[in-house]
Image 1 (cartoon, rainbow, N blue to C red):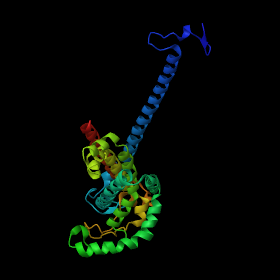
Image 2: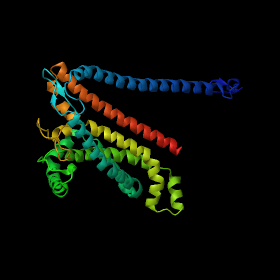
Image 3: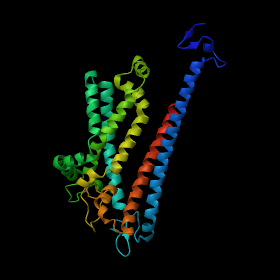
Amino acid sequence: MSTVTGVSAADQTPGPDGRRPMQADQASTGRVGDRLFGGAATVSGVLVIVLVSLIAIFLIVQAVPALMDNSANFFTSRVWAPGGEQPAFGILEFLWTTVTASTIAMALSVPVGVAVALFLTQYAPSWMRRPAAGLVDLLAAVPSIVYGLWGLIAFAPVFKPVQSFIQDKLGWFPLFAPTGISGGTICFIGVVLAIMVLPIVTALSREVFDQTPTAHKEGALALGATQWEMIRTAVLPFGRPGVISASMLALGRALGETIAVTFLVSALADGNPWSWSLFNGGETFASKIANNASEFSNPNKTGAYIAAGLVLFVLTFVVNSIARVVIERRKAFTE
């Protein structure tokens, strides 16, 4: 009997499972690798859950004592004096500034990012797509401090006339009422954050749109659809879950951005009258904590800032949870 690589022909006889012995050994090795990879993935997933849970537990344990001693309403008060004999602190100003600036950022960045992604995947010539996509990816890698310095030095003088124009024309509306602040207003911070998160929305949306099945697009065109009708009926429905994911990821960065906002924001003095105007100053959760890290000198002060951080943690967690629910429902609907 002839042999192949030292194995006799008899040893090559298929077994009961239809596989030759060498194939069975190779498959067994593959199954071991699959089990190792599956185990490693499971451990990684569990580790992430444990880390997030431990962070949440730490924040709660550190924040509860300070909240119990707080003499002001934590959610509706603007006072911030956690170091006195009767600590009093509230997060209304931080919550309004954080949510409003992030909302402005998303309202500006998502439509522009989706439009740029559609242009790169559906309209741009082939010689332009790769260099333009590379530039977008490079913008996503720019550090936050660079955006902060650029906004402070280069963009602020450009935005100031725009802000003055809006105040002159729409100042009668409470959201655009003049406040006397010309520097780091909530609106200005929102625009800078929009520029920061725009590459994230664009890059992820581009990847999703580029994966639209060719058969779907060609089928729409074969039925007489125009280029835009094909995009509206084939590309956008396919990429909607990815756009939602990209938007929520960008929103998470906008909510927690620290360095750039710290550079740009105009903090309000104690006792400043409250205003709903987008052209008012204020501090976000992240900038307040970063600016006052040196005040972590006693448990009451530390607990107050950790309580503010806990609200930001919960806010980000809720946003991502809502995005996950929306995406799962969309997938179930399309399936």
